[in-house]
Image 1: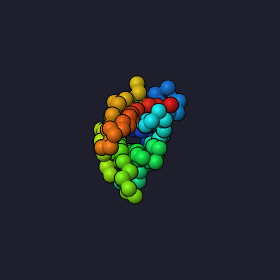
Image 2: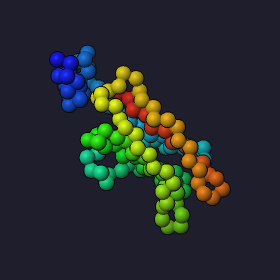
Image 3: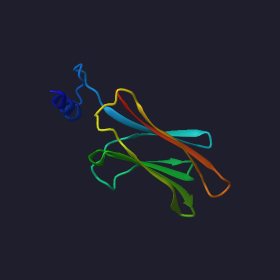
Image 4: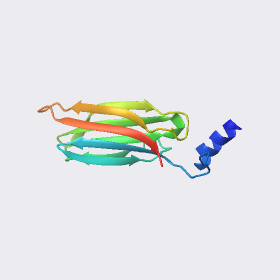
Length: 128
């Protein structure tokens, strides 16, 4: 019975109380006092990313792969006409469809090579 409820929750987004729930992942990235948010959508394609530009100097990307139960994040710095990878992370996701409390993946502080410019980013999983 418990497994059936977990499967229903996972497949249909139905909580034990019968209310619809949805699992969400949001990432906030900040550079130069300006913040951007990405609501990360689940992707079946391993080459599908969501990205945001930070002051045309950095690019933050996130990827949620539910089949592999992981969240991946990437931070790139613009150098000339291309981007160079500064930081990459992978976060395992919990097996339950909706954690009782939000899950915080921690604050990342990344420094660029020139002038030690700092980018902060943080992702979290939550249910609505």
